[in-house]
Amino acid sequence: MSDAPFRPFGTAFDADTALTLLRQATRGADDGELFLERRRSESLVFDDGRVRTAGYDASEGFGLRAVRGETTGYAHSTEMTEGALRRAVETARLAVADGGGVLADPPALTNKRLYRDTDPIAEISLAAKLDTLREIDAFARDLDPRVVQVTASLAAGLQEVEILRPEGTRLRDVRPMTRLNVSVIVERNGRRESGTAGGGGRIGPSGLITRDHWEHTTREALRIAVVNLDAEPAPAGVMDVVLGPGWPGILLHEAVGHGLEGDFNRKGSSAFAGLMGQRIAAPGVTVVDDGTLPERRGSITFDDEGTPSARNVLIEDGILVGYMQDRQNARLTGVRPTGNGRRQSHAHAPMPRMTNTCMLGGQADPAGIVADLKDGIHAVGFGGGQVDITNGKFVFSCTEAYRVRNGKIGAPVKGATLIGDGATALKHIMAIGNDMALDPGTGTCGKAGQWVPVGVGQPTLRIGGLTVGGAAA
Image 1 (tube, helix red, strand yellow):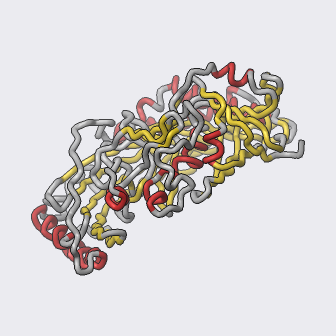
Image 2 (tube, one colour):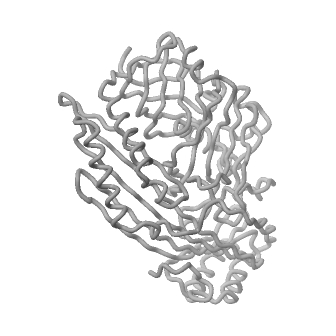
Image 3 (cartoon, helix red, strand yellow):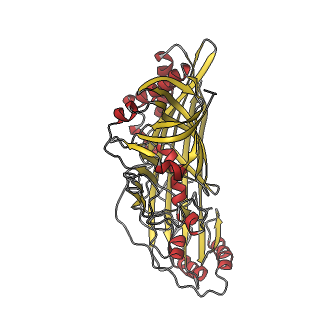
């Protein structure tokens, strides 16, 4: 596949013919679009002193959608030809039936640029990337004789998108993504523990493979691994928990964010359905979803329906003030789309999804928040988690956490899980730090089988009455 810019109109399709066919597909519909995409990605993994993976992938295709009421007709193909598009029209029109719809107004246009459109794969030579990964491996092993395994990975990708709408609007976006990760395993007296650090965003690799950056990342991975060597079994019971800033916002994302997506609320299946304008969180809690942050992992110039991304306030001073909407759910509920219509690829129809979801900072001193904790857990790193959207119940595992007694941070604990529900946790927020931070750029969110990159963030928080799962106290 050529590295030349993606220009499907004039090569794969004649633009006028494509527009005529799109209008046929959406005649009598409420909405629809032709979404065209090309993706290229590279993944390099250096593991235990050797190159384990060196992969390159390329794909392209289109998705054609026609929407009538709550019904969506969707057809997609990797065959970028007029014949494939004509067949897709027949399939998409099945949702329109006898028509009767009036096409919704097109999205507004935007000239903002949130990231560069250069190719992150081609920015640095393959040899330079592999040399950096080898240096990381050697550096980590020289730092500490307890290091027994190092895994360093560098991934880069470029998504090129064109959207054609029935009124004739054409939009184009070029979306880069790069990420560097380092994982370290240490061993002492037969006990092995691991630590991982890394991140990235809609940037090229040059900023990630500078020595200062990867040394810091490697030291952080090693620090976490060494901390876990001394970890004690986590206590169990109901207690107050202090969450650190940045990546712990993944708990907010899962336990609260999904419940504020428009489709779940329109259908009444969210724990927050029907609560607009009511208090759902403690005073001082303000949550936003902001897709306009430059170069962040979850940012998009416009969403996958063509709506410009925005900074959407969801909870303001504890009051529910907004949901995240795509065009279909916004139309069905009589509100405006918010730029949250996202899809994994051309093979998927869009749905309401988060971008960068953050709780804003408060006034409290983070050290004072910990000092006020008499008996509990200070959780600063999280791994996997699960949430039930209908009731907001969540379970999250901690990758780095500490026992706190009488305001003093004590030994690290291992095996701690936080159990609760988002609606209750929001109301039990007791203190909000002034140190709001974004995650380093590692988040990927799954919903209905689709995965998209996202960002999270929060300040230091104290939440009362969470259930901590661990060893018996």
